[in-house]
Length: 410
Image (cartoon, rainbow, N blue to C red; front, top):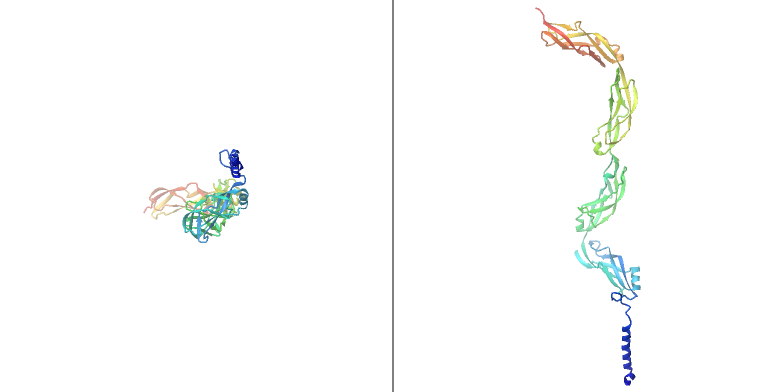
C-alpha cells in the first residue's frame, strides 16, 4: 500500500477519479425546466423580417414569377455576431436563375456574405418559379368614371387620355390574358366642371382581375368634359280667359322668342317648348307685363326666367242695320220667285268690330244673297249667304229666307 502511495501515477489516477466524482456532485444549472440544455449566455437568436430577395436572370428577355419580394431570415450564433448581422444586414438573399431554361422550376433561396459562425434559416426556403419569354405590347387606355357623380342636369363629353397608349410588359401567357387596360378616375359628387385627373393604369383579365405586369407610364392624365344638358326651345304664348266685352286682343308679342332649358338627357329629348301664360280677362288697354316662363316637370332650369309681353287690343262696337237688301240669284227664266219672308226683301243685320270701322258701316257694305238654283215649284226655306267687310263680325236676325216658286203663265 505504501508503495502505491509513493507512486506518482497512482496518485494522479486517484486525483482524476475524485475530480469526476466532484463534478458529478455539482447541480446542473444549464438545464431548464423541461430538462433541455439552455443556450449559453453568449449565444443569441434573431428573426429578421422583410429581407429582400434578389433575382439573377436575363431581365431583358425573360420574366420570372414566383420569387417572393421578401423573406424572413432566422440567424443563431454568438451574440455579438448576431447583433452585427442584424444591424448591418450586409448579407444578400438571392436566387440564381441564370442557368435555368424557360418553364417551371423548384429552387432554393440562398444567402451569401454572412458569417459562417451563424446558423441561418430562410422562410420560405424553397419556392416554385416560372421563367417565361418577356413581351412588350402597346395598348389603348380606356378611361372609366361614374356618371352618377355628375350634378343633376350635367352630362359628360368624350373623355381624352394623355398618353392614349401605354406599353405593357410581362410574361407571354400573362400578356395573352389581357382584356382591359383602364384608367379609373375619381369624380367628386355633384361635379359641374371639366375633370382633369392623373389616374393609375390597371391591366385586367376578362374577369376584371388585376394582372402582374409592368406598365409604362404607370399613370396617365384623363380629361372629362362636363357640360350642362341643355337645348334651346321656342317660347309659346298662351292666352287665358276671355277678353272683356267690347275688347278684341289684336296681338300679344314677347321680347323672348326662345329659351334655354336644362334637364337630364332623357327628359330633354321630350321637351319641345316652354310657355308664358297671360290672363286676358282684365285687359282693357294696350299694356306690357312681365310674366314667368313656365317649364314642364323634370326641367331643372330655364334661361331667361321671365318674358316681357306687349298686348295690343282693339275696342269693339256694335251696330244694327235693319234695311240690308236681299238679292235672289239662280232664278229660272220660266219661273217666278216671290219672297214670303222677309216680305220687303230687306234683312236686319247686327255688325260688330273696331269702333272706327263700325261707325262708317252702311247697308250696302253687305251683300245678302239667296240662291234658288235647282229648286222646284213650291215653297222653300233658303240659307242667306253674307259677304261682309274684313274685320267685321256679323249676325243675322234670321239666317233663312222663305220663297215661293211658281211657273210663269204662257
